[in-house]
Image (cartoon, rainbow, N blue to C red; front, side):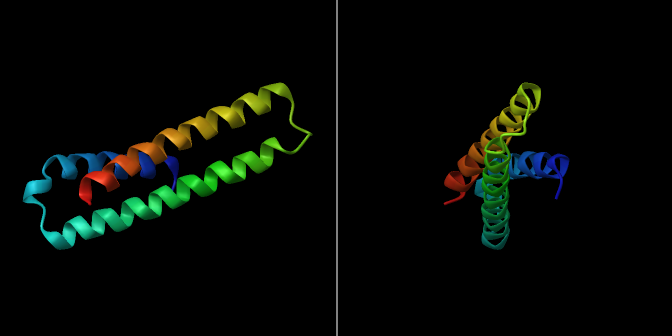
Amino acid sequence: MGIRDFIRNLEKHREKVQQSGALPEEERREILREAEMMVGMADHAIKSLESALNNRHLNLNEEHAVRFAQDVFAYLRDQEEDIKAKLR
């Protein structure tokens, strides 16, 4: 799953959560499972980027790019965590 797919799924989850009263139990569980998987993927990306930051061969521009990517993944993870909380 690429970042665009991640964002599309996040938007799809948000839309469905807004209609959560109308969600069948099976669909709610499926969205929750997907959300948990996406949170895990974002966590893994954040850790991998942290590993790249620990590489002393990064120049300042690269370091800024990696930190920006970490912030993006942290934001997406937090958004998906909110969806999980609403589904529980």
